[in-house]
Length: 435
Image (tube, rainbow, N blue to C red):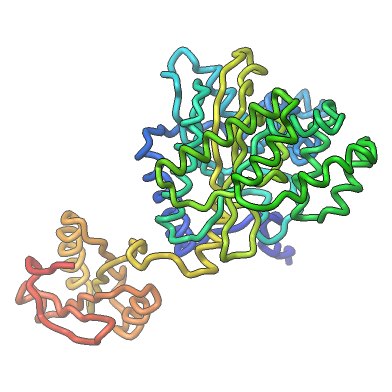
């Protein structure tokens, strides 16, 4: 007897049942509706990209997490030429350069597709997951950052999820590296302090020294890592610390403008200036964002920032862009934990036809066709069997109405309509059925 294989899926991936897909589609639809309010248009790119497109864009640690696709045929023994996309931003930059003659700049795009990372699976962290990205490229205007923060506000308002947006600027981080005497260590500094929440201050300081920072430089960094107070207090303090750094002062100026504009527009989303936020991706050059849920213990659920020259590596230099990515899978976990899915989102079957025989089944199929043309979501139980079995099916699927068809109903052009919540039944003419 042949061995029976136990069905399984790779770690860090998931199947989604119909209820889960209904919820996921609610998330995607809500986000898309907000994107559309701001004029963003949808694109898609392939699941796989050239390794040359992906390598070197995500920092040393990101490169390690790339899924490489083994070559086939004559090149089977050579280094992989293709990999699964790690995010949607780098493929977007490649897309912009490749299709630049067809696009109107500034180009506003959104993209909702899966990405893959060879990460260690844990709660809220998967190897295959969806990102919902929104970017505008071809403008340096800080109004784009303000607009993206408003998109964050509207999306989470619609979900009923309490969040806080953490804001920083890579120019401020560059200025900090400059004033502590380690300008060439900006990547090492940002990679280490980005882990502050995960590994704690002592371990960050240890990692900074391991990455080649002097004890004096690490000491100078401590007041910045420990900054507290209001956003204005933090900006005032950091402004003084970075007064002699041109790039640092520019970062403070940009951040002040964004915060002031949000206030003028009465944006109610809580925004916290967080100088320990680094976002470990090397391509960020200006404002960086991260959104945390306030009522759920989970990592960042949205993140992004400004990048000034991501397209330069593909031959189109000096094109600035800014974007954010909504982590659909983590948003799903938050909404599930807090039970925030509205009842109205379940586009389930409204009425089930149940029958006693083949003639009744044909009658039900014709009635169902008429109702579907009116936009009613209808199922016909596909075989006339015991009524108990058909009713159990309606209960299991939480179908609110059952239309029972027997000989009398056929003769009178009616159905016996049963309300599955109250148990009430009444004879209703087919043409009078309303749901």
